[in-house]
Figure 1 (cartoon, helix red, strand yellow):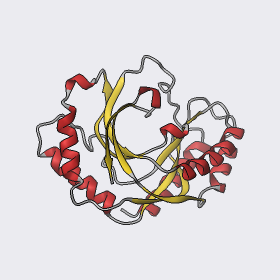
Figure 2 (cartoon, one colour):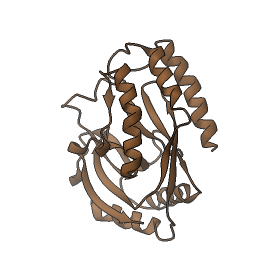
Figure 3 (cartoon, helix red, strand yellow):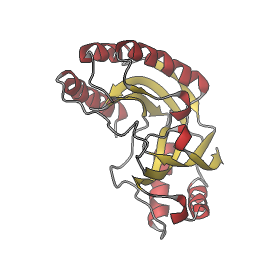
Figure 4 (cartoon, rainbow, N blue to C red):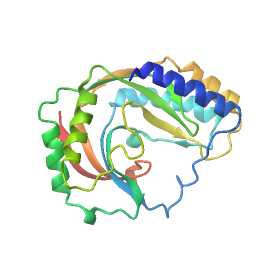
Length: 226
C-alpha cells in the first residue's frame, strides 16, 4: 500500500463528508456502561512527538472545544488488534501467556521499528496523525503475527474488521455536532504536512483495552523490548 496515497484519499473523501455535514458522532465514548473490550499489541510515540501533537490539538480545541481529545497517555499506533473489542470480553476467557509466547515468537527476527509522524488526515468521525514506517519491519511483523495466530487454536479476530496496514494515530473523535466544520478543516489543512517528528519504538505493549484505549480502562499484559 502507498501510505501517502491512502492518507490523501482518506482526507479528500472525509473532508468533503465533514463539510457536507454527513460526519458521524461517537455516542459511546463517554458511556460508562460500554462493555466492549479486547486485547491489542501497540506502540507509543515519544514525549517530544506527543508535545507536538498537543500543539495541534490546542488549535483544534480552540475551534471545537466540546469534542473528545486523546490525552498523551492514550495516544498510540495499533500494531495488531488481536482480539477486537466486543461486549463482555474478559481476561478470564484466555490464557495470556499463550498470547505472549506467540508474539515473542513473531518478534524473533524483527529489527527496530522507526516511524515518522508527518501530516494529518481524517475519517468521517475522527482526526488522525499520519504515520509512515521507515521500512517494511512493521508490515513484516504484522504478517508474522497473522500467520502465527492463525496457525494456533487461540481466540483471535485479526483482520476481522479490516486488514491493518497503516500506522496512523487517532487523536480526536467527534462526539458533538460540529460548531464550525469549515474552520476545523481549515485547522487540519494547516497541519496537513506538518512534521511531528520521527521516533524509534523502544517497546511494544500487549494490553487489555476498551474501544478507545483509555488509560483508566487499560491493563498492561506484557512489554516486549525492541
